[in-house]
Image (cartoon, rainbow, N blue to C red; front, side, top):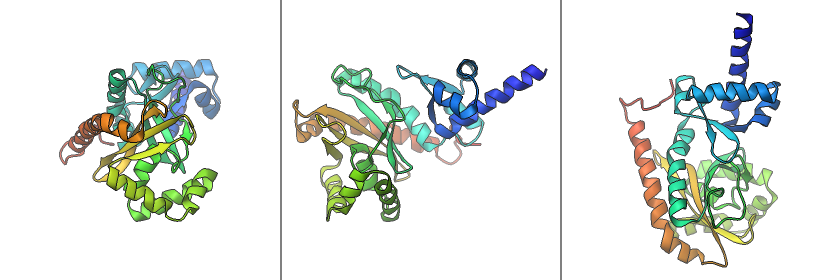
Length: 264
């Protein structure tokens, strides 16, 4: 009995650590809980078999699933949106070959929550979930910032400029933020050229819930292959269609009278 209680306690520790990090590795969970990696492996396998957690393919990382809504607040609107759009990004990458990243803004960074770089034949590098990027220096971050309310935008930019020197330079450039917002409105998408991956550029769109951006998706291209305008002309409608289907599903799940995986 004591052994079973100890195992349960360890499982709760792993679940709590995963809840706080959203996406994590065995190494990080072991460090956060003080448990051995072997023990964490066993706990994760139990959570996966129970449907509470899932392994992210080709990354070695783990995240919560929709079933976690039964346990508390670890599964939220952002997690739900990511879970809905992630398989669609892989399908689209398989179709057009260009990689797609999923971004969330948190703690002054544009955090990659999902990526198809591992399955894209066009991409020589791999972006792991959990990778932190500059907000103003990434297309996904720009897509979210440009569609936030003025008050939320000011707060996010303040956090970003404290964390990233490159974001501080952008924010200090007269007209840069206004130009970013105007570009988003006129073009219908955000974009990045060069920056943290000098040979690439990205176009991005936000995913909204109740009119507010909660995540963004960006498609990545090589600068030598095509221009930003050409990429938008060929692929923007595909991104929009994918996002609209997710936004529609989110609206259905959050409709009054439909608990659809809501927190309890």
